[in-house]
Length: 353
Image 1: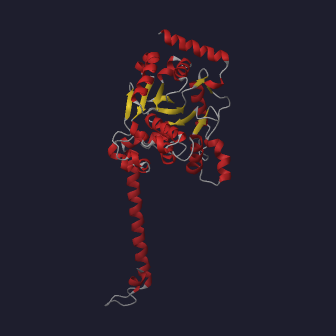
Image 2: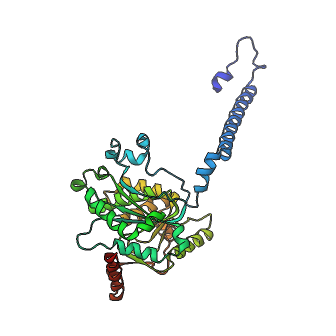
Image 3: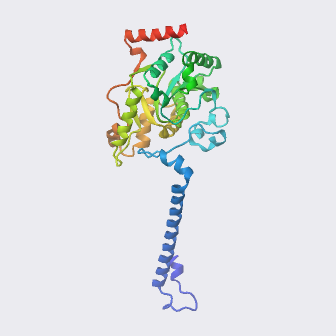
């Protein structure tokens, strides 16, 4: 551009078209270009700020972890546009793969905490009803109105799903009707080639990803549980207070928590922000065959949230993944005889009803 500009046009003297004039014109053009970019950027910013739909759906979901909302279970016509479905090819062409085979729900949403309880058919003894009894027993009436328990049945056999649903309905018909309990089971196509190519850990990862995808938009917080755990009294209030304290005390210049841990050394008692779950869901779908869920969570934090070297990331891990001082959850296998006797009394009461 400078060579063309510095060439003196015919009919003009060198004095009338010198180098300084050319430089001035170049700078003038650059100023106009910069001003245009600023105006366009300002206009786009105004659209974001003043668009009511964006304000209501996106801005409130921003948080200190710098993550925003992403899709969970998406319509079939949009699956090809979502990275997670591009990397799980068997979901692309199966219309029913993300539609549940069974769904029992009163449509409860907007709750404070969603409790995800995945379950499968047990060969010996199922503790699912004992787990649900204990969760509900340790909630007061207000907490029950602000909570949603989602029972996810990770089975492909329709008769098995019906049997588990029937057992839940026998004991918790009123809680299902009130909207406290949802029951969901995926279509068999979701587990394409499971028996031949998918390990137990991969099956667990797929179950958790589906459960999180269904649950993430239904509450502020999501808690990952299992179907053989008991908890302490007022556990919901304790978890909510701990989450709010961590958010209130967070330094804007430092990492904010991604997961709060209320039961170390297991998947139980991991609390997430509902708005941030889709990013973890995508990560799980991409690497479900490679690593177990606990390691998956660690890798997600290291490779997605940590932008420093390994030393700094290890130092900041306690900020991304804080632990509560006292475990709130306990596996039934570690119960005392007195506690197991109480569970037996619940089961006998079920049989009488």
